Amino acid sequence: MQTAEKTHKLSTMTSHQMFTLWWKEPWVRNLVLLLSPVGIIDATFTILLFGQIGAEFEYNPFVRAAIQSEWWGVWFFVDAISFFLFIMMAGSYYLHTRRSLIDNRIGLVSGLVAIRVGLAAHNVIRFFGVFPAVFGGLMIGLFTFIIVDSLLDRTSDVSWHGFKQWWMHKVDRRHDEKLMKKAKKLKPGDETQLVEKIEREIDAEITEVEEPVTSSTQGVWRKRALYILGAVALFIIMPYFLVFIGDLTGVTAFRDIYGPLVFWNKLSAPAFLIGFFTICFFTAFIMYLVLKSFEVQEGAW
Image 1 (cartoon, rainbow, N blue to C red):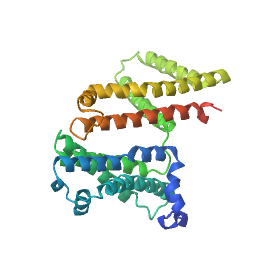
Image 2 (tube, rainbow, N blue to C red; image 1 turned 60 degrees about the vertical axis):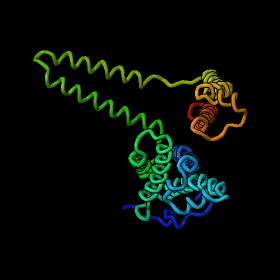
Image 3 (cartoon, helix red, strand yellow; image 1 turned 30 degrees about the vertical axis):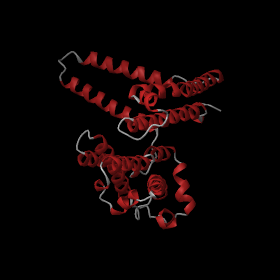
């Protein structure tokens, strides 16, 4: 039986490991970066709700006092950055303790992440008033807990190759179940056709597996050039797409009427957030293409 080692406990983590360990594993790094904007979203919509409804919407007395004071900017920064620091430490804590049989509090960490995501979702839904905010925040928080807890409960890493193997395993099992159902319904004399069909499928799969996987230097550089060109194209397209969003949301017309200063209101705030997330998406996709062009697994260098 595996015994828990001291190096797998939270108390043995150094401050350097707490803030850097999460970056070493790609899928944990992507999960942390995906959840990091939650703090900014929560702080932004808290301020927007304060301007729209007033301080009575906030149940936390400390937050209410902070946003009503002249130091609300400091609170905004602390609220936005605190969740990013927490999710970084959560990812590092998971990598540090995931192979330990005891002293592992992954469920508690997942619950705290889900609560913060649910509260941010509550503020967003309440500001736009699409449907009941409490129900929406509760559902999104529960959904987040299920996903994060299932990911952080793993003892092995997540990879695209592993996901494809899992999916192909499911497809193959489904295919085998259909063949078994057909075999049970066969009439006498039809067994030969089914056997021949199965043999053809097996031969096709074996031929596909046995094909030599060769990648020439020319092919590698061709892939690299396509990735780089894709990143450059996205960089060029991004400002035009932002102008399109401004025209679509009406911010351009607002600017033409009231000047270059765009105030926070029901027209400009959603447009600003759409533009902000668009920039984040384009930047992330450009970085992905650049990193993909130099990926070792694809024979980049």
